[in-house]
Image (cartoon, rainbow, N blue to C red; front, top):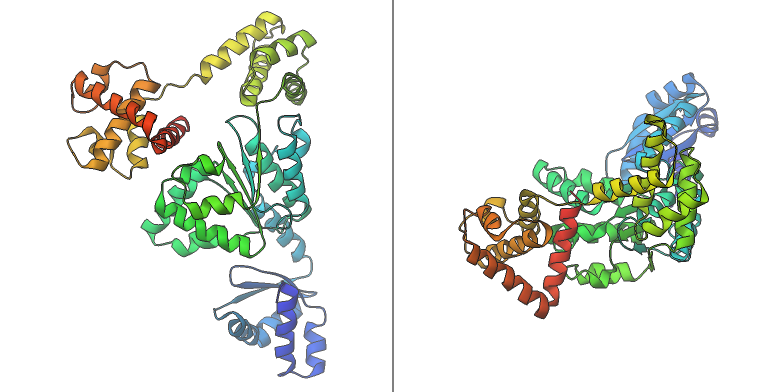
Length: 435
């Protein structure tokens, strides 16, 4: 049985052994299945009177037949007349994702740097579960990976609103899993992600090194893949560069199609600027477009930020867009985009990565795992902030600057000799920058 129609045909066969042909014809000839989901069968009939008879006389028989087929208790919902329209509208709203709004293929500017990833995404949206499964898109932050991911979801949803779509970020998957374990709602968590037609996972790199999360994701991946449903994943790097990723996940990710996105060339950047400006109703001169494209070269998100900044100048300040305005907008966006994490965030993310508490890193615990985590956090604090050795030591119960310096040098030496340490530092840095 592969569809709700097959299941309903089986139910009618069971009913036919208990009822006369006249009864079957009278009550079920115009009764049609709508969907089966979460142990509930939804039917539709023409009148309220027929609905009441189906529920009162045959409801228990239908539930018993479903229980025999699936070995679990079922409910039935019978819609009558025009109720099917309201049900479809509600279902469409339930199955849509607010994250997908605005992310469409026609708003994605295609250039040499991303045309392969774009073509792969379009192919997946046209034949989900058939072409390129899983699709793994990777590249640096701000290049359009999430746009393609959500555009696939938008396209599939538009074609068939009944398709169940789940979207989650890698770190959020971990948070939800921990909460489910704590609350005893593991089955609901698994149902949420495993029984979908399309599974969209953004920034998968955040699950690397988290063993329980990787184990749960492995089984989720297998369930969806074996059902021949589509999986799309994005990451800031290819699987082979995730040093703490389970081999069994790495081989599955690499078993599909891998597509990278590179920074856009000048021509593509100019097209992106014009496209974004048009969306916001902003007219830019060729000189302004070219200046922006020449000065912001590696990040599409920053290009969009400049356009939004110029729009604000025009609308709020009634400013004429000149090259000076463009220079000011670029300076503001780059200044805003310069992120210096606090010591608290660095310690929090390092502790989380090593499955420790923040007070373990700050305190006197000398276990091997804790000592290593503390040294890494000191190295990151030195690398990512402007703090002095004395200031860093103050975050760890006033350790002296010599202790801090020795810890930093220990990590620096490991980075030269131990390839896994580079992956650890990069993963924690990525987590820190996501705050």
